[in-house]
Amino acid sequence: RGFVLARAGLFRINRHVSQVKEFKSACVRAAKEEGFVKTLSGRRRAFPDLHLQGSAGGFKRAAAERQSVNFVIQGSASDFIKTAMKDTLEQLCQTELHERCCCCLQIHDELVFEVDPDVLMESAQLISKCMTDCAQLRVPMRVKAQVGKTWGELVPLEQANLLLSDPPSVPRAEVQDGLAVGALGTGKSADALSAPADGVSEGAKAAGGIMLLEDVAPVASAQPGALAGSA
Image (cartoon, rainbow, N blue to C red; front, side, top):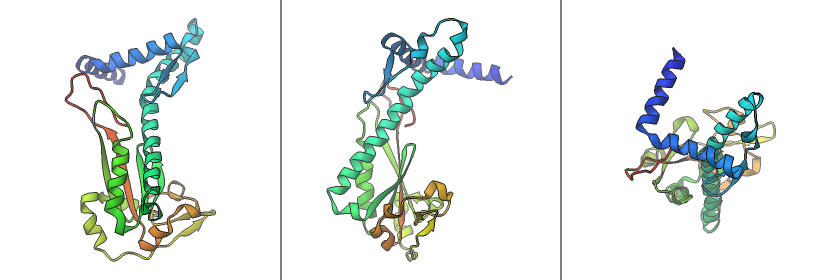
């Protein structure tokens, strides 16, 4: 029954969003003809298993077809977030914000910063612009910013005034296995939130350790023929 439902779902997708099937076929065709596929930024990956012959190579050949499609999508998303990280660091270093705004983590299409509350809005504006401008697409790239004292207490950036009106907590850095866990040290495991001891901004720690989470993804557009997914 599950297989039948899955096939029915794919049939509806291919019927209503025919560009998806065309895109996947184009990726596989390019990989076979040129020997590689490219991300939107031009990074290449070859798939030699696409040319395996016979039934013995059927499994590897099918896997290579799926990977050739996946690389274009997720590889492009990876390029976008790395470009956003580079551009953000360069922009921060051109201002005094780099001493009060520290990038702690990258999780897929999200960046986590530890920020001095006094420069929160200014930092969020700069970071959001860098993430929005990290790629030029036919669909808009929108950024969602959230802020909180811990990962489990995030609220939309628009509600930051309510958060900052509370008395700042005394920041602490607990050393665990040679790593310092700063203001992010609740709501997630120590492994997920640990950072090198010198990677936590002294300015942010002294100001109470506000956490800023930026999430970027392309969104659907009304433009005919435009196709976008999550970054």
